Image 1 (tube, rainbow, N blue to C red):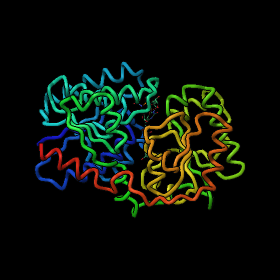
Image 2: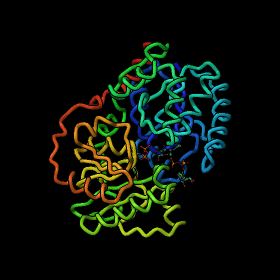
Image 3: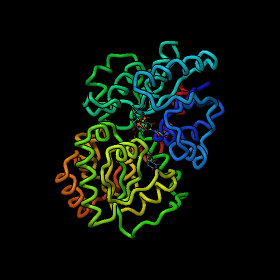
Length: 352
Ligand code: UD1
Ligand code: UDP
């Protein structure tokens, strides 16, 4: 069976690292990887293929830095051509980026079966590009690999029980990656304090809204006066901070590879982020997380007290940080399948 995997953005490389590793265990599966080019800086793309030994993409469409319509449209065209040439049995897409919806739509229109990893997640905020991408991708996918029970409940509420798609709870492939690569973690090439907070920030809802962005930066600056904050600056955020002349007083560093990221996760005392993936990784490495968003798709982290929403409100963020720094949680609870998610994907595809 031939599986055409569509990748484009950083979190998808990490997810695919786990799944490609599982696929390689089965003679029945031949995987061909397409990189849309959505992320292209060496520290946003190449580093993951190298460090995590992800098979090199057979195609790179080099489509990036465009408005949503142009980016998705050009990806659709490029992926369609590749599907026509490769004639895969399955097209695999991950998460909720523009590369995800482009891959799913190109495949479905050609009557090629679509498997969606991280299906069923909802923020219920239709202003987010990710929410639009994931709802549309779910609707045209043949197998929906859901990481959690709440994800399955979301689909059922939308009437998926009555549709023909197959819904499979497989757990979270990011936990597979965290478990597998944990022993290989390595220190980044900058120094870190004994106690520090690990921060990332890149979501459009924060970076493209100057009031939200300034509030979050101000909160981070204030926290940094008390506890060092290490911000790994996504290129999107860096460009906007520079353009707007927003003063950032934290320890700002360039993005790091995943093995360095695990080192930082192991050594930090708290995570502050608006990333989807990082909210879960904080939990995998037994760290509490303040999420700088008004809602999260990973509701089980909030329900179990590992995650607190700070929105883009300075007082709320600093209060959440102080509260979670004091909170001693027991992280010994299985929320994401404990590392079997990729194997379930491979076996489900083989079972047909
Ligand atoms: C995308 C996803 C988002 C995901 C994030 C992961 C969509 C709509 N959004 O957001 O869901 O959380 O990836 O990181 O698909 N840039 C660079 N170098 C790079 C990558 C990006 O300079 O290697 C710049 C681009 O030129 C662009 C900006 O960052 O100006 C945004 O990139 P884009 O891929 O459009 O969206 P992300 O914000 O990365
Ligand atoms: N990540 C990384 N280096 C960094 C920042 C993040 O390797 O400098 C990893 C992080 O550990 C997680 C993934 O990138 O596995 C999350 O991707 P991102 O936050 O870009 O996207 P999201 O999950 O929000 O879609």
